[in-house]
Image (cartoon, rainbow, N blue to C red):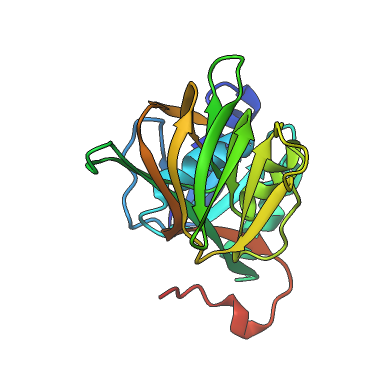
Length: 263
């Protein structure tokens, strides 16, 4: 198998364990590639092992979203919502995956945003695993008119979070939103709403299209926690992405569920 290794360059512990795992894998005749921050990732990897926290998982997931490469996540973070393997059990779990074929692959829905200028020209197309966020820049609240199910609503506050099921345990949860169980749902969460009568969150199916007509006030767009651009007279369309993130989950699964073939 061809296996990629990504580790947090700022944590010596991740580099140490990643190096040891690399040697362990090569002894078992696997082709192993260390993937740096600026390296190009190709489609021909069977797995990528991620040594780090949730932030690194997000970065890696976004880098490989075009290729449907399953991610094995070893936790070196503080929270670990997106990681499922403890460092001390890495060899046990890798044996289950690579030698005993005891795993399944879970598909995680992603969310996309298209930004157009006042003339309708597309200036940005991106997608995320966790969330798309419109947030205030100054101390004043911002107001956003959002079209959902054919109806415009104006939301006013510190920002708006559009989150996936995966992102429901991230910023959306910290802002008081619910934790989603099903992967076919999205959350619209107003951060610190000015109107307390507004629902704190809105849950919609994954075929929902959110259209943001305009943000009133100084606002910026953030995708999976990274600032992308300042918003002025821009229109945004936010909906389910055509891409997916693949997570490797380990356990005693029925034989039928172990197949990795994804169409």
